[in-house]
Length: 239
Image (tube, rainbow, N blue to C red; front, side, top):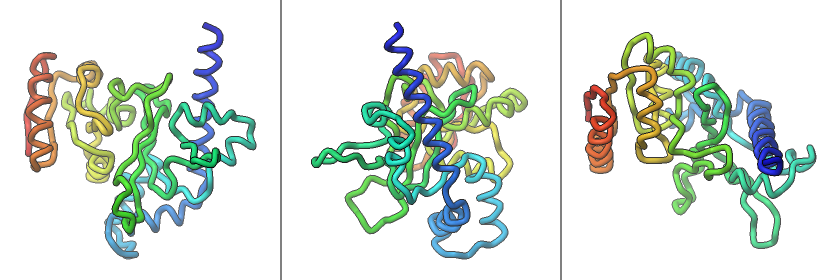
């Protein structure tokens, strides 16, 4: 209906604004802090620079230093949409705070390249109670069961190689891109779903699961194998 369409378009515009806001921040600072996160130092050697140029920069994760919600409200966007999209949270005093404050941002692209959600990795590890990763809440424009991180960048490579690699997280995808392997996606923020499997199946019948070798990774692999076989996929598993 008309009201739903207005809400849908408003939320999409807010996400676009947020993407522009992230990209407009100090890229040099983001690059330096990304090196620190990955390497544990300020050693900007050739390999780390390649990791950034071929991986991190391609997916546009940028450390936020300013309050995005102030920028959005000044541009006329409503607080209710900032809350509905999960970009902000409301404090006890009624003010808004960015959900992804002081984190490296990983935008989630749909199959056709639209950004509908974000993942965010904390950089300040002093707060032991803070979750390592945060993900966008589901909304009218984002259902996590339908999306795969990296699918927009991977779809041509998946078709070309007739194989898809399935990994666990954002940085796994980026690291493989840095090595020249682009037919890779991740089900970040959720367990593997049938909708995600069918999305991969549009481009190939062949899939290799590359999950972590810990107990959680093994459990996720076993669960995923049954689902993949049900959907008629040819699978390999590497733990």
